[in-house]
Length: 322
Image (cartoon, rainbow, N blue to C red; front, side):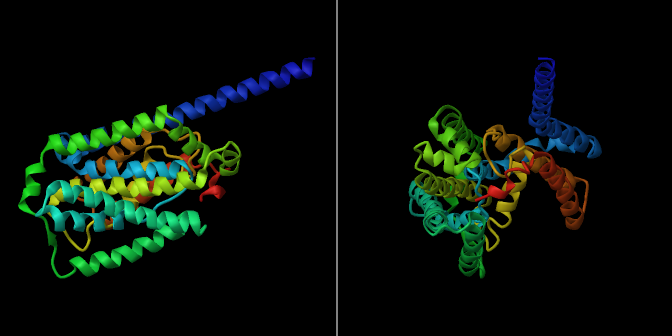
C-alpha cells in the first residue's frame, strides 16, 4: 500500500512538472515576441515603433501563406514549394489583372491549387515523402518563373494599386485567419489533422480517410498561397524573377518561432501562425534597422531558429515526418 502511494505521488508530481513545462513552452513565443520588440525598439531608438505600419504591411503575405503550411505541418508533412507557388500565382495574377481583377484573383488561386494537387499526387498516390516532392517542385516551378520573368518583370495592370490599402490587405488576412481558426478549432477537420500528425495508422483505423484528407490539404495550401499572391502583387505591382524567393524558408522559420511542433500532432496551436509570423518579421526588420549585414542577419536568425527548434521539437515523433 505504501509503495502504491509513493508511486501515485511520483506520477502526480511528474504530471504537474510536465504541465508546467508545457505551459512555459506555450507562453515562450509570446514572451519572445514582446521581448524582441522591446529590445529592438530600444536599440533602434524608437524606430521599431514608428515603423509598425511598415512591419504590418510585410506580414500579410507570410501570415496568409503560413496558414496552408500550418495545416500541412499539423498532419506531420512539410512543404518547400510555397515560394514557387507564390511566384507562379503572382505571374498569373499580373497577366490577367488587365482583363478582370476578379478573374485574376480566381485564376491565381486556381494556379496555386493546381500546383498543390501536383504535390499531392506524388505524395499521396505515389507515396513519395512530402519534403522530397516539394523540394523537386520548388526547383521545377522556380525554373518556369525564371523563364517567364528573367528578361523583365511581369507588370500588373495599374488597377491593382486601387487595392493597395490597409483595409483590403488586412481584411483578406483577417478573413483567412478567422475562417481557418474556426474550421481548425471547432470542426472535425482540425481534430483529424492533428490525429494524422499524432499517428496516421491509428487515425485510419478510426475511419478517417487519411489519403483524401492529405490530398485536400495540399490543394488547400496551394490555393491559400495563390490568394496571398494577389496581396503580394497589390503591394509590389509586378512579378520579378525572384518573386516568392525564400518564402518557404520564411514560413518554416515563422511557424517554428511561433512554437509549432515540426512533426505536428496534438500540441499544435493555431496561435503558432500569428505569433510566429509577427516574431519573424519583427526580428528581421530589427536586424535590418540595426544595420547588420546579410551574413550577420543570417547568423543571428540561424541561432534563434536552432534555439526554438531545440525547445519545441518532439524528439520522440521526429522520425514520423511524412
